[in-house]
Amino acid sequence: MSVRVEGLPEAAKVADVLWFLPTHGDGRFLGTQEGAREVSLGYLRQIAQAADHNGYFGVLLPTGRSCEDSWVVASAMAPLTERLRFLVALRPGLQTPAVAARMTATLDRLSGGRLLINVVTGGDPVELHGDGLFLDHDERYAVTDEFLAIWRRLLAGETVDYIGRHLKVTAGKLLYPPVQKPHPPLYFGGSSAAGQRIAADHVDVYLTWGEPPADVAKKLTEMRAVAAAKRRTLSYGIRLHVIVRDTTAAAWAAADKLIEKIDDETIAAAQRTFARFDSVGQQRMSRLHGGKRDQLEISPNLWAGVGLVRGGAGTALVGDPPTVAARMKEYMALGIDRFILSGYPHLEECYRFAELVFPLLPLRPTTGIERGPVRNAGPFGEMVANFVPPSSRLASKS
Image (cartoon, rainbow, N blue to C red; front, side, top):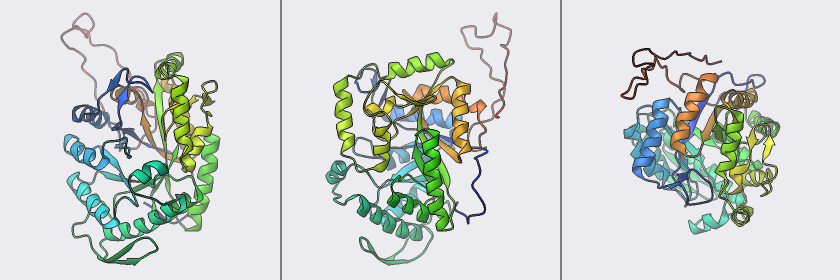
């Protein structure tokens, strides 16, 4: 959790890795129904259990009108998994802090303390208007500030009387506390000055989308300065897609294939939609590619092709396992100690990334699992000549 500032920030020596539950849909291609997969309980269960089995720290559940509700999905997945944590969205302005506090405490208890909280202020005015919220960018962050002040006090067990500009609570009380004290960890990403102030005052983990390392370094330096003024330090996380294959050439071929069904009008329509957002983070993402296909490798092995049609996280690390691990370590050198990753399709890529890249990363004990020798001796003669075990080589986490 947050502590007082003591000296300069250091590079992250170990990291946690989270995966993603695609509650807005999944498939082998972007921008088309071809190869698409239905969002069903069965499919989401497969991904959640794959992430659990492979030892991912947790999974991010997206939020918004294009997604199934993250709280309902997390509630369905919790009893189907054992150690997996669920990063679920609070929506200030769309929920009251007291109701959100009860939801938080309940899911944290029922999951055995496996809840993480993602604070989402929102960046699409059109969508927010459809949800009944008619506040401008800075007003939404003002509501978020008041919301979190109340929410945190309720989760800490206080009786809350609060009168703010936007929110008012009289004798608020949470009767049944969460497992995690004082509350589940707060994750938050806000690139604007207003967002950085919220992070400095309230959150535990500050998130950024996958920009080139130099841009991330500048952003984190600014955020550290704002937090230091409040005598707080934060942890830092990054949201990225990953395309990893046995060779770098195969990885780049997979990246090209992912967007091969997208036509220029689909890209133009998506970029027109993103242009209406007042999210500074989305504006930064869109500038990386400018809606054009010709210069999508914006930094070594960092590819902006996903952002041609997908809002939010729009970049992917592309390469063979050692290269992708090396790029992740570059972000760790900046202080990133949490990676929230995804790949298309999410079920297969969940396995692929864990099998190929986990052994090459310095991971916390909370990510990855200790595996003994794997017995690969099914009915089709995986044993060499039916009785000779295949040779094995364990990679070190370094």
